[in-house]
Image 1 (tube, rainbow, N blue to C red):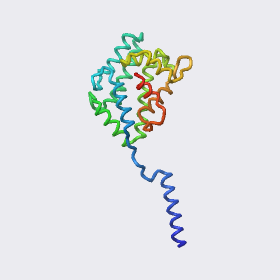
Image 2: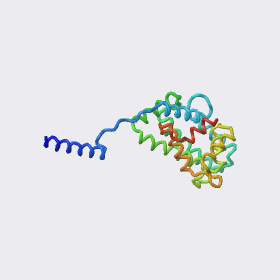
Image 3: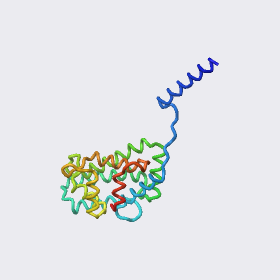
Image 4: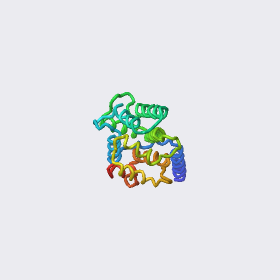
Length: 208
């Protein structure tokens, strides 16, 4: 009996050790209806020309508004365009020229379930690059004008709703830190718990 108890203690210690060092295989993450719903809303946000697919026509629509209304220097426009084009080609299209909503959801589901940590990391890079592209003066903050210009360029033209979204971040001196915007986006596209407050989802549901 004592030998059995000793072996039980040894096995318990081995199990605890394996869990601590990650030797025990973890259950893969699973998507849920809440996440898929949010990804669908994100697709709609990115479909700037409202044709039901994502293609390079969408960032072209976005860039055209900045050219017409952004009052940017040639260098600012070039930098913004290069960042946006690279962003879309890297994160949205991979090896496709056009992505349907079904393709988009399937891609995110596969990435989330195969390696959630990697997807979260990727989804932190995406808004970081995006925010750096629209942070026109490079001060690591978005002014209200920069914030609203971005959403109008995305063809979300309800200025009142865009302003309401801006103030959800509780700006200081009419500026929002890029890090706050980035983290809110990461939560929006990767958080499966609907009990957690989601600024981006709230803004979308308010008519963004």
